[in-house]
Length: 338
Image 1: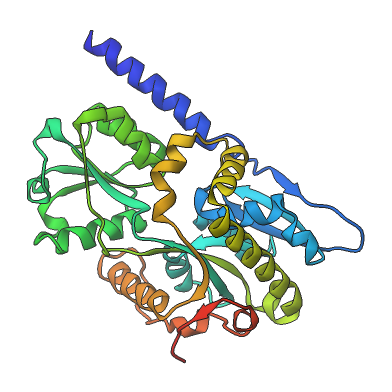
Image 2: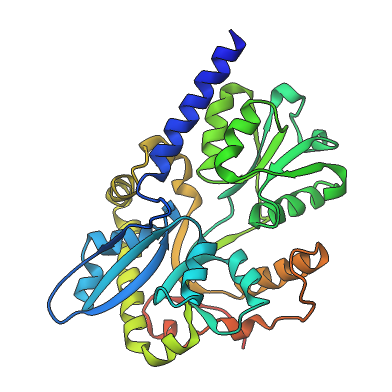
């Protein structure tokens, strides 16, 4: 009976995984908007709801209105998007702050043109009540699965510190994100530090036996538009038009959230329950905030301390943001101190 139950859970997880990741495989399907006399721009877009402004801008023709033919290269994860930028496979990419920090120790030739969304709840800590965890203190000596060396690992460290513990008080093991829901359901781990959509899948697998600890302000994740410095220098007008298209999309998201959500459901083949689960956690806005630099600096210190990166040279993250174009976009917010 129990084995049949676990089999059903694994089947559900496999089906959900296909639902979330369809259209997002390693072949990285490319879609574009065509038109006469348009400037072509190739963007590696992470296949996550955080990328909603890009999908809305394309679906509603905001890029075309700016004279752009934008081709998306669907890519799993911001780290891979940023790598495509560095390898000159694309003109631009979307990446969270953490990959920017990691790559900054080896590369000095890329920059952030804008942040387009932030969230304090995309990364979550979810535990199994069946393993005797109902409050943070009960995580001590438990097995916690995460993607080691990634943003979820950093989040776990922050969470433990603010609950009077450290990484030394728990047993951290690496679990690939797509394997995390099953690992928790099968009892291979007691808890997960995990990003979406895998937190949602893990919660559903455990049903009433899950507990999700409040993320508070432990970690504000940002998603950013990144590109090589030479590209932004030589194509400033194109970058400005991309940002204008994103600005129109963000306004649409705020004014017509239901329609924006349905565009996202269709584009990423998600289910409506998942969108309802995460939507209010996202703050869509074009910004370059001082808090972004603070986060990058804190992550860098942590990565050096834990041996995630080996280069001990401090990085000045002012060298990795370019405010020149965003300041001309109406409604954008820049608080970086230079």
